[in-house]
Length: 104
Image (cartoon, rainbow, N blue to C red; front, side, top):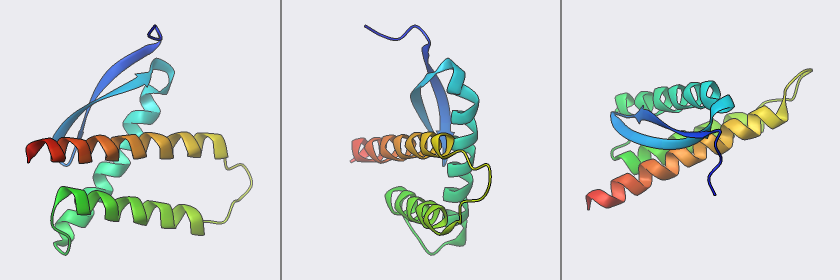
């Protein structure tokens, strides 16, 4: 049985369309996460040192994880919200990689 509060949101990462299932109350966070991941991946691509969507996605994931792990926790950091954003970003990366696999 599907959750009535869940909807599919169409997002674009590196010019590729993805449909992501998302709880309606988390839609804005998903959009912010997608924008963040897309900007990171575009930056890596535009730097020109990494070729291929899969490699770009892996480098972006490593960079984001490194920043997370080296950031000192301060005051009012909401770990639950941060974890949720990481999960959403991971799902977006996995879908991107799956879409690329389908091309070959």
